[in-house]
Length: 300
Image 1 (cartoon, helix red, strand yellow):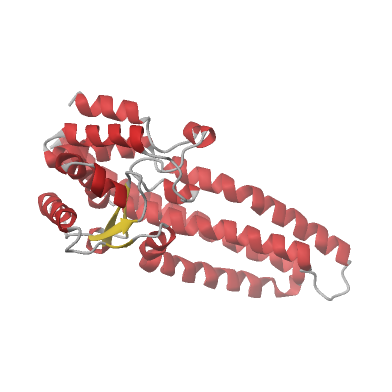
Image 2: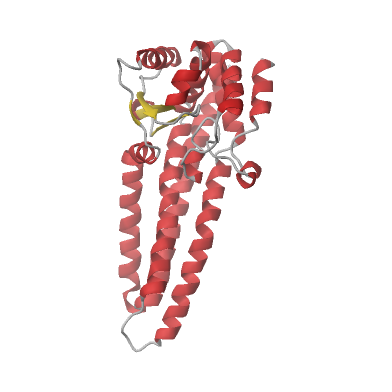
């Protein structure tokens, strides 16, 4: 009974974190609108703030309804042909049935590495993407272990928070880029104010956001906690009733992957294993060390 309550607590926590994330990004964009009004024309402050609010709401709605498509597109994932990847489709369908959720859409990522991720706003609108390498290198039990891990992310709504984080934080980087461009190519207003002062303010705002963007990326990565990965490992093992399947898959991932997938930092946090680790993101990684994950799985 305690396990069931813990599972529902995770769903509630993910829903709460999603709301907090949306609120923080929304407030940030309103503040950006306020700052831009001082750069261009303070008398139009509420127009700039209103425009920022509308853009934020539209971006939020787009993220909620189309964020999974954006994530899939950025990773180069394509729909998995049901004939060519029949076993993969059968595995996803069987584990979805065991988990009590609808079958997610299935995608293939053109990469020789072994990796996978899940995305979507809820179990009714979810997708699982796996690399070409996963379908060729892993055996049946290992593939089931990986798919079960991703199915657990879908079942406990990790996917909603991770998807919103991945898409919405992108706007922070975009705003930083736009302000930097304005700083380099103009961005002043034709009023009586001193152009040099406007340029200086724009430069400060642009630099601040340029610094904030990567920090926000790391914050989101850390927000997607290691505990959540451990939970998905344990839930996936419970689903297949064979912890060794996922343990063996993680072992192959640690030994076979080139770690050179062309994936952005935030998107990388969606995968079952970091697709392009470096010394820096090892220190701030949302993923526990694979060795520790294998150890825990084999102790079950």
